[in-house]
Length: 367
Image 1 (cartoon, one colour):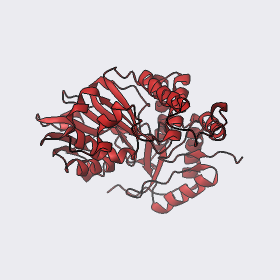
Image 2 (cartoon, helix red, strand yellow; image 1 turned 30 degrees about the vertical axis):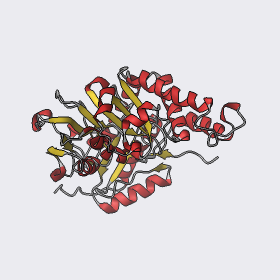
Image 3 (cartoon, one colour; image 1 turned 60 degrees about the vertical axis):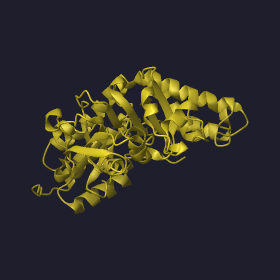
């Protein structure tokens, strides 16, 4: 087996090694059943045990109230951009959205197909370098919900505290779910693609308050109704069995480490190390404003694009991979989700310091 590298990729992202090793064994022989994980029937008692365990662990870790349903769906988080308004905005209802990045912008475009959408805040003119304070926007009083993306992977911004409003909250938490405690009761709906903090690509978790299941009009296709999946325990059709299995294993890993509070401390420690290097001089410049900095994704630039290319190449050569920034803003990005270990962050920090010393350059003033 090749030596494992430090995977800073934004998603699919690093998974706990022990989860990968257990999965590898179960792919060949699932729980000593003589059948591989990729072969087991979704109707079998073995898989029913897996999906039941995954739901129970998520409920325990996030302290999800009893009047919420947990769904394991397909279609990625992008499908939730239209499923949320399709299910919740029938009859000309309104909603308020906060535009803090690419994924919020895409969700806004989809939501406008189904209801009246008020974009109460946008940081697009500032290249999405921050999230708003509560005082910077007003929620339309007729809105059914306030929609926001809790963590923006591309730009490295994060809501450190959730919006303070009496309006029901709906959030895309794809890239920071399980990274810190969340008062689920403040939300009508939370969704998250698994491939950053929960597991592999292929399954999306939806946490929805039960009363909202009745909002959906009859004319919506069966597979696009939350009620369809809630009534059948996410088993209306064949679920992504292997992906749900890995989610279950990741949730058990989080529990064994001490739960979400421990994850929060780990994540704060890891991100502080990288931001500490960025703030130690003017060689590196973080994209996000200080008060909006993400604990999950650290986006930054070097003095020139040529140095950025060299930085990414030399980092990859010593096993620090996945550091290239998103094409929309360039630069570099270190994604350090729950499963990314402290050792890898320390290696990155040391490399950043060496690279700056070995490649001196004058910082070009920000435009």
